[in-house]
Length: 96
Image (cartoon, rainbow, N blue to C red; front, side, top):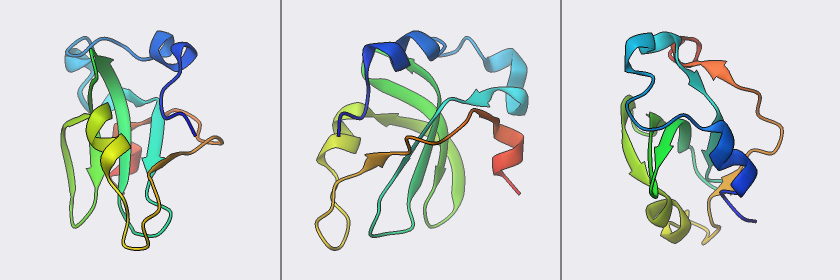
């Protein structure tokens, strides 16, 4: 599965452009490990770098790269996938 398409890139705001919205910015894409409990929600993107919420050991905001997502494998060796059925949601709603 391709994690990022041209259509998705067009929908993602540039890095830093959502700062004024804070927690009201929307997560546009959800990536997840099918054999683990890690999830990445991307709200911004530029040149291979995303900003969003990472839900792993704890939930935290930060930057992560497309290269990183493409190289990571879960405990059973499965690659990260993009949730094809994910609908955009405000970051604040992901914190609950």
